[in-house]
Length: 116
Image 1 (cartoon, rainbow, N blue to C red):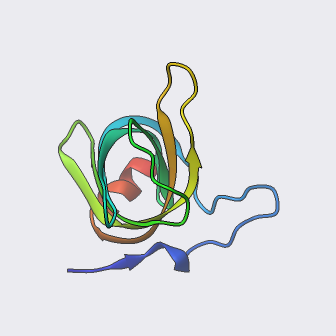
Image 2: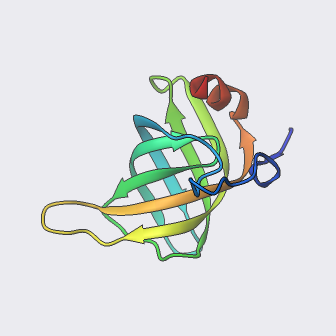
């Protein structure tokens, strides 16, 4: 199994805090921390991370295991990340989690194809 560390890639530009471009998606995502397992829909996805809408918040700074089903459910990404943004739900909306992918264990090639 090849492990890819996303921290080794392109530097952050002055104009944009993200290292990688994000793409609007609607794909299922499971996040597991020490004390919670969360399921939700990813709103955007890129080589460096994702933004997830969920009913259960996870606090900023938590390390999480990540599983994402994309490509119509035919592709899976498995890896680890860190919650870099935690947005509390407002009236009628769901909580939001910005997650930086720190390592990708499976599915990096499929994710790179999606990004092309």
